[in-house]
Amino acid sequence: MRIRTYLPLVAALAIAAACGGSPDPEQPVPQAGVDSAAIRRARQDSIDAENRRRAEEDARRAEADRLAREAADRAAAVRNDLTAMINFDYNEANVRSEDQGNLDRKAAIMQANPTLRIRISGHADERGSDEYNLALGNRRAAAAKRYLTNKGIDGARIDVISFGEERPIAAGTDEGAYAQNRRDEFEAIAGGDNLVAPQ
Amino acid sequence: MQRSAAILFLLALGAVPAAAQDNRAQDAIRIGVTYRPGTRPGLVVLPGPGLDSVRAIVRRDLDYSDQFQIIETGSGAGTGAVNYQYYRTQFGADHAVELVAAGGGVTVRLHDLAAGRVRNQATVSLPAGDGGDFRMAVHRLSDEIVRWAAGTEGYAASRLLFLSGNRLYRVDSDGAGVSPVTPAGEKALSNAWAPDGRRIAYTRFEAGRGTVVVLDLSSGSSFVAPGTQTDLNFSPAFSPDGRMIAYARAEETGATNIFTADVSQRCCVQRLTVRGFADNLSPTFSPDGRRVAYVSSRAGPPQIYVMSVDGTDQELLAPFDFGVTGPSFAPEWSPDGASVVFHREVSRSPQIFILDVASGRVRQLTSVGRNEDATWAPDGRHVAFVSDRSGRRQVWIVDTETGRVRQLSTPGDARLPSWSRRMGGTAVSNP
Image 1 (cartoon, each protein chain N blue to C red):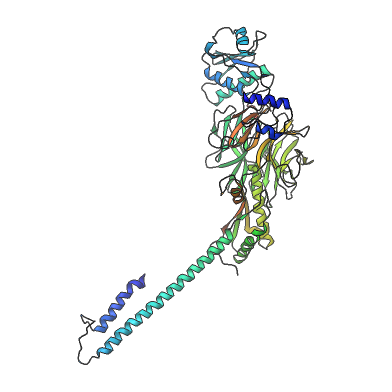
Image 2 (image 1 turned 45 degrees about the vertical axis):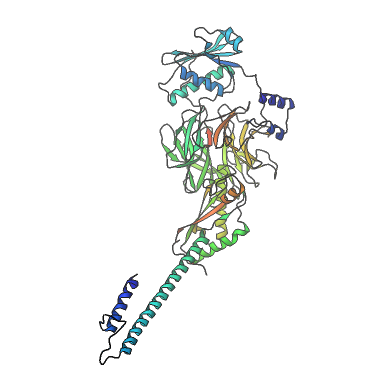
C-alpha cells in the first residue's frame, strides 16, 4: 500500500526533472545547447527504471503471497489431517483398515510437533442405551489412542473422553446418520499453533 | 370393541406367534400380556363436598393403580347415607369410596357394597395449599385405599426422575408437580433414587467426563461420590439400605468397570468387575442387597449378567442366543426381587422385556415404536419407560399385568426415568 501511493509521485518528479519544468512535456521547446534527444532518452530511462522497479516489487509481493498461501495451505492440511474424524462399524470400537492411513498421518504430525497434545472424543449413534454408549464412546476413543501409542506416541500426550450419543452430528434414525455419528473426533489441546508438517 | 375382540381371540389362541400378535396389536398392546377384562372390581368415588381437588387426585390414583374399574355415576348421586343397593345394582360397583371433610383434613371410608358395611375408614390431616406435600399426602391416602380394597400396595405416593434437555426433573406418579432438581447450566445424565426418597444420585456430565453426585433433595446439599472425581463415571444405583452406590467407570484404557462406594462414610471404593477388554455398566441391586445385575459386553454384544455384591460369581442372567438375540441394556431389579426389566433390540428397535429370575424366562412387553430404559414402580407391577410412539421421546407407564399404557405428561423430550420407592411421611391413622 505504501509503495502504491508513492510511485506516481516518483514518476511525476522524474518527468518534471527531465522536462526542466516545461509546461508541455509532449512538445519540448528546443533550447540552445540542449540535446533534445538526450532529454527524451533520459526521460525514457527514468520511466523504464521505474517500471522495472515496479515489476520487481510486484514479483516479490507475489512470491511472498504465494509462500504465505502455501504455508497456510500446509498448516491447514496438517490441521485437517490432525482433526480428521474416523468412523466405526455398529457396536464396534476397532479402528477400521480404511482409517489406518488417517491415524498414521496423525502419528507423523505428533512426531513432528513434540509439544502437541491432543484430545480424542468417542461418539456413538443413538442405538444401544444412553449409558452403554458412554462406554462405547470411551472404548472408541481409547482404540484410536492405542493405535497412536503403538506408533510410538507418548500416551501422556493423548486425552480420551466420551460423549456417548450426546453429541450427534447427523440427525435422523437411518443408517446414514448413524454411520456419521459413530466416530472419534480429534482436537489439539496444546502446541496446536504453527504446526510443522511431517517430512 | 375391536380391541376386546382381538384380546378374546388372543386368549383363545393361548401362545400366539409374535408376528401374528403384532398385526393385531397396533395400538400398543404388548406381546405376552394377558388382558382380563371385567375381572377388576368396580369402584365408585363419591362426590366429596368441598373436596373436589382431593377427590380428583384420589380418583385418578385409583384409576392408575389398574386394580379397579372406576365407575362414573354422573351427577345423580346425592349426598348423605351411601345407598349400597343403588351403586351395586345400577352401576355394578363393588366398592364405594366416600370422602368427608374433617377439620383440616379428610375422613375416608371404603364401603363394601355387597356386604353393606364400611370396610375401612381413616381420618388424615392434609397440609394446607395444593403444593407437593398436599399432593403427596393425598397420594398416600390413595395407596391406603388400594391396600384396603385390593390387599396390595399401591404406588401413588412415589415420584419419578427424568432427564429433559440437560436437566433432571422430578414428577409425581400421576404426572403432577414437575420441577427441576439439578441446576440450570449443568448437564445431568443417568440417575437413581435412594430408597429413602430423599436423596438421589446422578451423573454430572461435563466435556466428556462425568462425576456421580449425591444430592439431598430436601436440604439441597450435595457431594461427589468417592472414586468418581476423575474420568467418566455414570449409571449410579443405590443399595437397598441406602448406604452404598454402585456405578460404572469408563477408564483411559477403554474398558468400563463397575465399582461400589460407601456414600454414608464416603469411603471404601471397591472394583467389582475384572479389568479387561469388556464393558461392564448399569448395575442394579437385588432387593436383598446381595446381588448386582448389570450389562456386560464380555461375550461381544452387551447382555444382562449378575454377580454377588462382592464381585464374585459372575454369570449370565438373561439368556440369549448368540448371533440371534439383540444386545440388551439397562436392567433394573423389581422391588419384589422376582423380575428384572431391561431393554433389548428387536429388529434394530429397542423393546422392553421382563425376565423372571427364577425360571430364566423373558417376555416382551412392548412392540410399538422404540422403547427403552425401563424402571419399576414401587408396586412391582407398573413400569415406566421411554418411548417415541407419540413421535417424540416421552415417559410412558405400562401395567405389566393388563398391558394398559398411559403417558406420564412431561414437558419437552424426556428420557432416563427413575422411579422412587414409596415416599414416607405421616402414616394414615386408622381410628
